[in-house]
Amino acid sequence: MHIVDTNTISHVMVAFVCFGLLLVGALVLIMRLRHKYSPNLIGALVGGMLCFLLLEFLPSLT
Image (cartoon, rainbow, N blue to C red):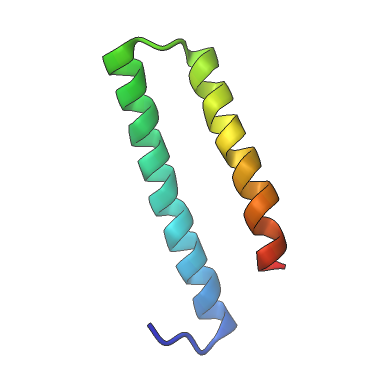
């Protein structure tokens, strides 16, 4: 993929974020239905993943 404009970069990032949200949502739904995990545990897992992503990848974007 050849990205020339900064506007295109933001659109690609938004597309990947939406795709990631769909994957995380599907994972949470499967965990909830199949294994009967409590919502608090699922929220803690998702929060931990988001914290890790924020700490690791935000400095590389700025």
